[in-house]
Length: 113
Image (cartoon, rainbow, N blue to C red; front, side):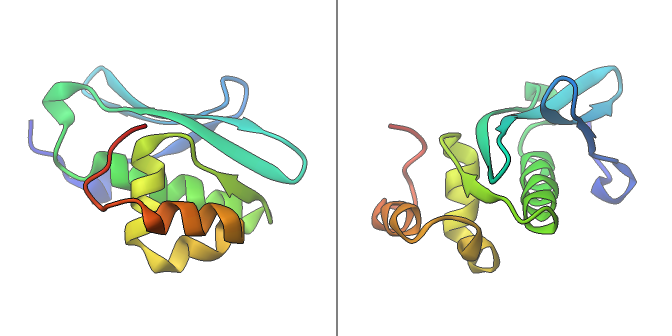
């Protein structure tokens, strides 16, 4: 299935604590746990038929923009979000200095622990 990312809306399902996008009866998501001063991004999931087309990046960007707008420090145990932050300097300020150093010290090919 070819995606038109511009036509896909990512919503914040606060009750379920996840950002999600519904496409053709399938759901892509990025789960989180919100605290008063920070947001922890735990897990991202894109159904295989929707993979490799930028949907995970759209979820991550939407979630990180939400964190910025709400003045939340980002904690990214999710390997995808960690890699996304590492590759996109405009989001480096959302993580602590220690976390940023840890992220940048990993090779760009690392996907997990």
